[in-house]
Figure (cartoon, rainbow, N blue to C red):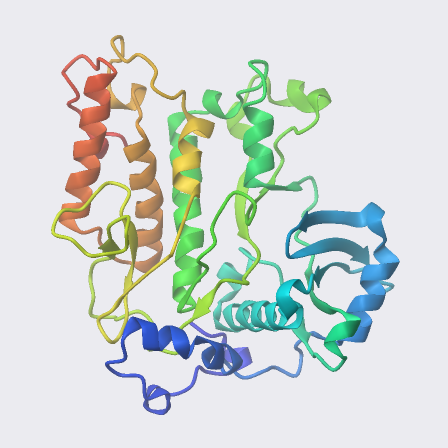
Length: 372
């Protein structure tokens, strides 16, 4: 839902998109990003010249990310505000186009988000692109930070915790804590859906964790007795592949989530890892193109394929299907929707099968629904 301070979304009568195919909606996405809510006079405006000057002043020592399509650096403005400046590499001449696309999509999602959902992302600057593309292309956003916390990519956090047997702190958390972490990730996914958007690139480098996790070994004793004191808050960055739909958003009459199988073709037989999303006002199912995090959450939080012959309850033999279910519940709860019965049944079936393979005492019974 768009913030009132930033103006309402365009009236549905002006969108003229009823009964458009999903592909037609994608073709109109760029225009939707331009018009996703009115700009506020308080909006943060940055020119290409300013962004380039900050990027150069930051220097290589402040590089926080680098890839095939660009480099990001953090910089402290004279005002005391930390920002992240991204320089786009002009591969195939698409440097300026890539910067404009990402800036538009990020700003559109920000304008459509309420204050709670804005906590899941950095505040984007409203960029102008006044310079010649040959002079470089840049975007600017706030640096996500909080006192007593560090910002890590999911990949960095995962690899640090799994690097040695002396760590594995996440495995030692209570199951209740792990469930909360999974559901919180689903709630973040719901924030993207509420903005009538799909991120379409949710992987371990674009999903971040704002956390007090002890990345330094010297901090490990602080959590020796209480692993549940570790805090993980989910954030998401890099909106370059996002699709901002100029459609009426969530259908208020649709009581359930919708789902697609792994190949994004609706079938009669749901699978536990089916993509899920929301039904829009035109009765189309809007689903993320990819989300790698639930699969990777499982080995981070639980010992994979452990022997369950001595397990007393299903909670002592958690499966990857349970993790998918908890993430999906967080998503559904945040949207006030139900999980379809066939998707829930497929998830429980997968959990039972995995438990049976791991020698759970009753042959796999006590499926996903029994782990709460």
